[in-house]
Image (tube, rainbow, N blue to C red; front, side, top):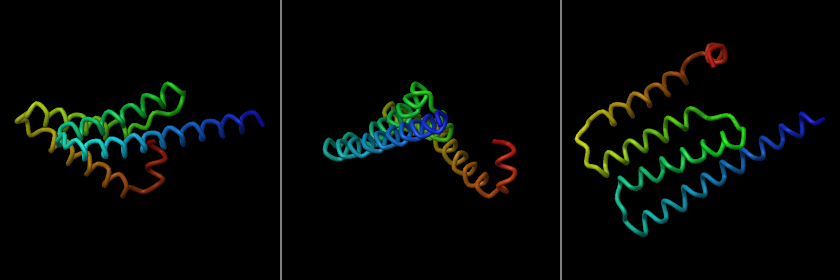
Length: 117
């Protein structure tokens, strides 16, 4: 009985954090469109929102979602690269590799993913 209550509380907390993250995302996109701040700041803000949600998950004792940490890190790297006008071509290559990794792992058999998760 207590375990079920804890599971419901955990799911509810995770759902609320996800909703807050999406809300912050839409507010940020609205601000970006109104202020016309550019791609660098747009990407950086999105990355910070993603990383903030994952930080909140850990603070509240929820499982860290590695995928969203990687995606948030990619947005941060891309945004900072745009802001400082970096001439480094590694960020696009990293994004392409990350995307290919996601695609390929989705094609692996489910039993392999469960065994290695």
